[in-house]
Image (cartoon, rainbow, N blue to C red; front, side, top):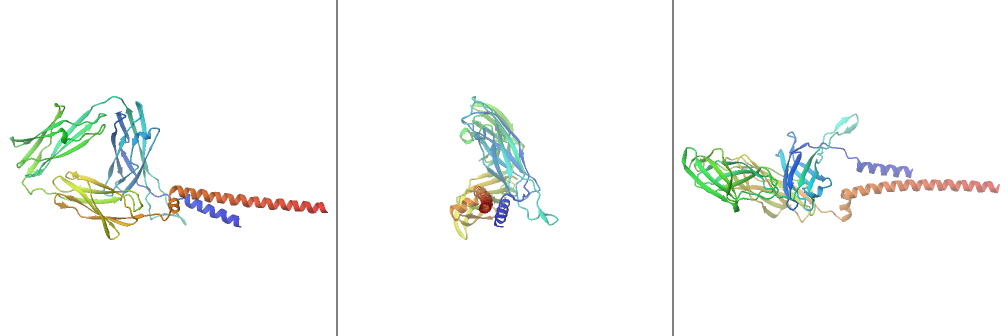
Amino acid sequence: MKRDFFLLFGLVLTLGFFWIPPSPAQAIGLSPPIVEAPSVLRDLKQTKMIRVSRSPSEQGDVHITVEKSGEYARYLNAPTETTILKGQNFTEYFFDIYPASAATGNYEVKLTFKVAPVAQPDLQKTGNISAQVAVITGAAAIIRFTVSGEEVIDYEILGVSGADTEIGRPAYVKFFLSNLGNVNWKPSRIDLTFTDVNDPTNAVTASLKEGEIPLLEPGKENNVLSFEIPLNLIEGKYVLNARFFSQNEGIGEFVSPPFFVYPEGTLQQLGELVSIGIDKTSYGLGEKIKFNAIFKNVGSIPMKGVLNTDIYLGSDFIDMLRGEELSVGVNEEAVFSEVIEPDRPGGYRLSSFIKYGNKKSETQTINFTVIAPENKTLAFLNSKLGLIGLVFFILFVTIFLKFHQRRQHLKKKSSKKIHEASVDNKE
């Protein structure tokens, strides 16, 4: 009877750990599914980007883990997770190709994106049994690159644009460029001419010097460089003529679509904090927490914004963070990110807003808990390795008990035979 109890107990615990009802996961897509870098120098990284998108019907944050695989996976520096925040349809996932010790030749690595299952409260009913049917979704991208010992300078200038502004405000300009080579590159100078469409004699010039232009990393396509040019433009309709130079040699000339300079006070800066989000609702003590905020420019003029966050532990204010300033074009969204690492357990609250110009967005809050394990044993048991070890321990105990009981049974049976043989001999 005891043997049957222990066997049943071990079986129940084992199934309890291994059988976890599957739950629906959110579908994702990758663009491009194949990333190619035709020329990479072994001592210089190339940054690449994959756009990870969600199904339009899905709501809430989508938490994604990323795994690299293949013989040459060590040549990729890739974050192990990314998140599509509530309010976003996609996120841009950046990784680096850095074959520091690779020989010249062709290489391939796979990046697998897996979506964490989302628990659903409603279960389908089949007779008297509750069932939940789901498919754990994911997608994979192939990274192909060629390690070369030859420096290649290759670039493409895609265009320029100007944004509407007001008298007394700077001119807002953007340049669209790609670095298709395998070394860092940038124009050495960009000459700008702002011309009034209705009065070509009204033209204002400016120039961006080499020190004002950021380097473009190798292999990085569709870069957007934004600048605010302090000029005294009068009211009117303008076009921007931009001439690009490399080592004092002209390499391209582009004209922007028309834009307007309005009287002072015509346009307004107006921003909206779409959402704030974190990866989880609870964290272990010492764990880093990535905090994201989506901000949209819903006004009629470009702006620069800064994420401001107050951190509370319970009702006590403990810190204030001021993030990096980001430019946000009209009708564009920007993701402001911060990483925090709480050093005390407890319930935390983040209270955030975006400061832009002389205005600020509405404030949003988010809560999370930091948990400190009571002891090392509890922390181990709460880990995946601890659970697996516990399962194998239970199986071992179950098998040992079964073996021990069988051995005792055989021992009793053998003793009985010896006793019977002894009785027969006496007779």
